[in-house]
Length: 191
Image (cartoon, rainbow, N blue to C red):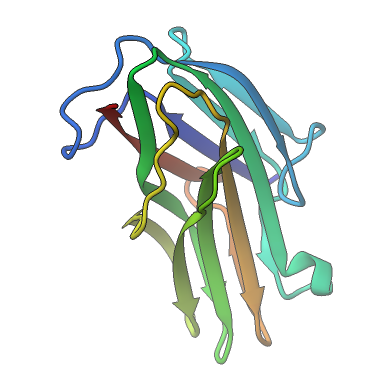
C-alpha cells in the first residue's frame, strides 16, 4: 500500500536562525483526511521527541476512479512544548514523490500551515504539467511567514494536498522506496 512519511524537524535551525530553544518537545499529535486516517497511519517519535515521522496510506491522487480520487489531503496538528521567550515559524518544506501527468493534464502538490487561534496561513505550491512521468524532489521557501505568538504555545497545523486534473494524471509515492517524504525546516527567534 502507498505510504506518506512526513518528518517535522523541530530542532532544525536554518541558516537564517543561528539558535533555537534548549528543549523542544512534541506533546501530542492529531491528524485526519482523505490521504490519512487512524487505520492506515502510524507515527513514531524520536528518542528525544524532537522529530515525529508519519507513514500515511492513501496519499495518492489520480484521475482514475472518479472525482473523489483526484484530491487527497492530510491535516496534521502538533502541540509543541518549548520555553517562554521564543517564537517560531516554518521556513521551508521539502517534498519528494512521483508524478505521472498526461498531455493536457496537471498535478499539484501543496502544503500550508497556520497556528491555532492566530490569523494568517502560509502556502507553498508546486505544479507539474503534462506530459511527464518522473520522480520529484522539491524544496520551497514559504514566501510569507506567520510567527507563533510570544510566550504562547499554539498548535502548529499543517495541511498537505496532492491533486490532479485532466484526462490522465496521477501523483503518488516515490517509485524507489514507496515513501513520499515531507520535511519542514523551523526558524526560531527570541521575543
